[in-house]
Length: 84
Image (cartoon, rainbow, N blue to C red; front, side):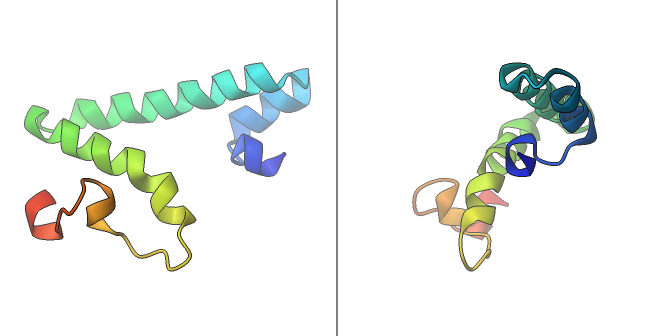
């Protein structure tokens, strides 16, 4: 259940109180959406799509065995110099 809840205190709390996996996932998604919204408030408008691209790639980047950040995974064949 730790993997499902992500270890987020509010998400774990909701799961322990309700035992409802759907409600647990909803709370988790709300928190993740709040992170995205908060990042967007503090970033220049022209940088938001790039930041979202990085944010959305984090789970797949961390799932790799070598854990190196692969820029081409963001956009097919892209290099760091093109993305940064």
